[in-house]
Image (cartoon, rainbow, N blue to C red; front, side, top):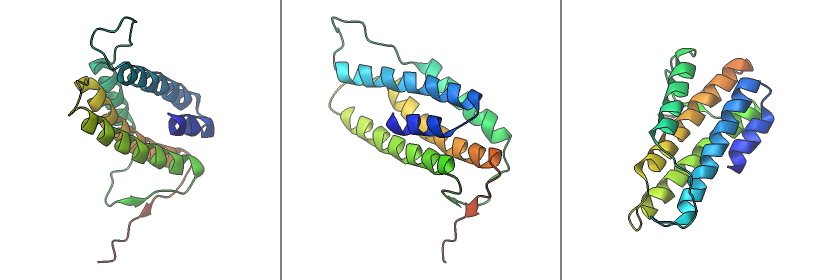
Length: 145
């Protein structure tokens, strides 16, 4: 969540800042569900469902449609917000792997796993969108083959 917050703080576009605030609320909800660790909790626990996954997928598709197609892998960077989006993406992937491992021991809502899978993709496409907004030329990866 801290990397999502940092990314939000680096952006000036109110639409993206609002979107990231929504994502932060969902991340807090998933953290609450995972911390509760009970199927019949005595307190009310937030619900994370397909709606949150669909939201991410729609935003990914919308942003991707406005960008030039990728022809190679790109090197992260070019602007602090672009770099921060990539940091958020990699931390999100690690979170997804940890949740998947935990799901082998305890029951975890499938939508939480799906949310983090799509969230890392969202951060990647967002990094490209931010680069486009700030006029940053994405550096293609040179695989040295």
